[in-house]
Each structure stands twice: as C-alpha cells, then as structure tokens.
Length: 259
Image (cartoon, rainbow, N blue to C red; front, side):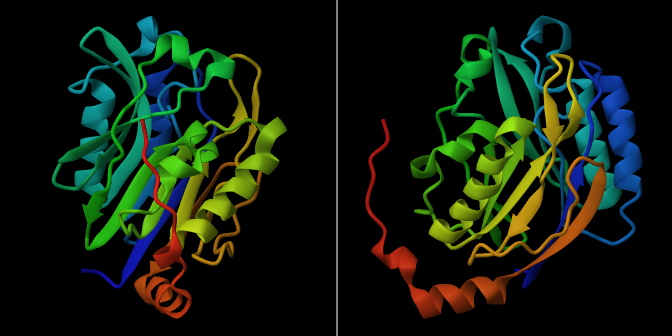
C-alpha cells in the first residue's frame, strides 16, 4: 500500500478519427513525463475524438490501441487510463480501459451515453460500476456524461479516487468545473478530471479545464485552459483519512437502489 499516488494528467488536442496519429502524439507526451508516476490519464476517446462514425475507427480488445496501451504501461511502469471505441459482440462501446504495467486490463463501459449527440443510438450503455484496486488505492473510473449523475458516482464502496475522462465542450465547461468539485466534496474523495482541448471534426470546441480536486473541493493542480499540457498531481492518503475521520460525512449518506 502506497501513502501517495502520483497521477499524470495529459490534456491534449486530438486528431479527428486518426488512431495512428493520436497514438504517436500521446507516445511523445508520455515520454515527456520525466518523473516516475503511478497513473497516466488520457481523455475520453483519445484515439479518435468523440465520433459516431464507429464503422471506420472502432477497434477490438486485441487491436492496435489496446496493445499500444499495454506497451506504454510496461515501458513507463505506470497504469495507462483512457477510453476508446470498442467493437464487441456486434455492439459498440465507449470503453474506459485501465491498463496496469503487467498488461492486465480493467474495463468500464460508459453508463450514461450522451443522447444530445446521439451517442445512445450508436453505443451500448454499460451496466456495471467498477472499482479498481491499484497499489492500495481504490479508484472509481467514469466517463464524461457520467459526471452529471451523482447517484451513480455515490461513494458506497469507500473509494479513494473518482476519475473522469472526457470530451466536455467549452460552451458547458462551467458545469464541468462545478460538478467535478461537487463530486469531490460530496464523496470525500479525490476527483481527477481529464478533458481534451481544440476543435473536433464536428467543429465542437474544447477548453480542457482538466483538474484534480481534494476531498474538500480544493483544486491541487494549475492546468491552463485552451492548451495542451501535462501535469503531475500527488494524492496523499493522510489527507483522505484526516478529513474523513474528522468530519465523518460519509457515515450519514442516504441509501439508493439503482435500476
């Protein structure tokens, strides 16, 4: 068990529907991380951008991008996290993969598909919440639109880190900032949010606003909006333990039944 977890956030532009170029670009950004880290987080659909044209860019779980993630995790000694388009059993999924240095993969399929963009018509929604145990830390990975649904994120598992990867557009970035902070406060956990920047192929603009918040909702990163940037945040277990023991808010949480 580690007392600290070092997390690298990669806020990046994405090349529209071009997995090969995106893998190359992220390889270079990962190589720029000179400090040893435990987790490297990429945006949602980091290989393609947020596209509905799944027939041309979807991959399988033994495809080139998954293999690339395993290679990067082994090379860096850090877990690599990000979502991509996966074709499986005649369905398509916006699937977050947590790939640890051994090559082992934990998958989470985005539960809340974004109907405003037609994601619900193309992608199958996930049904299972996932908690990852990594180096003694319990991590709950979620994807973009999941951020708007606090019951799904509710900390009933006593997780330490809530992690979001996203393609969250600039016109609604105030909601991104506000909800990330709210999820940290209400769940008394660290929250990591990694969003893209730039324009996608549909001319949607993204400002990034990637950040890490502590259990009190304080930002512990200083990532600039509207630009590519890599930043490492250090999460400290003593911070979680101190405030959970002092305030005990999670002991008073309501019970929910999800259908």
